[in-house]
Length: 402
Image (cartoon, rainbow, N blue to C red; front, side):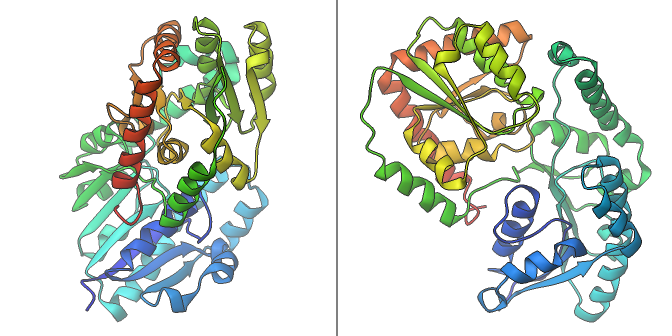
């Protein structure tokens, strides 16, 4: 017997994808193991979901595709326009409510939950169904001081300033306040977002990261690690996986590497983005270009192999809501060097690596350099922290556990 009939709003949801659609899919897949679940999904995902979804494997999961034809066509014409997609997503909530009401009359749901997008500052309207409503996990309130972005030019500084402005403006959105105050439970992915939800008037708030690993991903990562029999040389490899954009903090990692007294450390950077050319020039300026490898974007199997070959994971992100790469690195048994902020700050517990407080940019570089020195000098500590990270990833960040 199923415990409940659930309605989930997952604007972005598709099997076999990462990021937002991955969060949507993994959440509803796990819910459907114990409950009967109907999922509201943006109509733009229909062809991809139908191509990847096997109903016979998930008999308790039902997709309902919702769209606004004219606005959907407009959004598809401007895939890179955040403003157009934000407007479509905001208005999509009204279409989702109308569809949900018709479904509720026919099925009679016990609980409804907003799953994606994982952003706290856009409301859902499912609370108007009159049944218990769960908002989240949602994030997006994480931020770093604007002083960190001055060296990247006025456009980057202005973008970050606008982002902080939107965080503050969310407090004055009446639909958002209504949504949060009527929620039976709000889930924030970090303490930063949980604090904003409380300011909006949430009655009950808990912190729950939105990212996790599937059983298949855990098996892939651990298998790649166990098969890797790399001979240990004189150098140690630190890995980064992610986009190359200012707030990911890769430049701080480069400066810490240059400042660290131990010159056996190497930095392997996987990913691409608008900051790559600048970061390559920064590595040259710092005199560490021979110890830094920019690999660009790589296929999934090569990324997994890189986790298996690395010795540690240097991820100095400034305001990450998630941190899926951090969980993957932990699963591979890598000790983590990160900042105590955003998603990574909540994912990495004491003993799983080196988690450093956020100060000024120069202070972070000094703290990171000191942590790198300890990392390089003590093989036993590296091993112990890597094992602790792996245990935590399996116990706390597997979708089957979540």
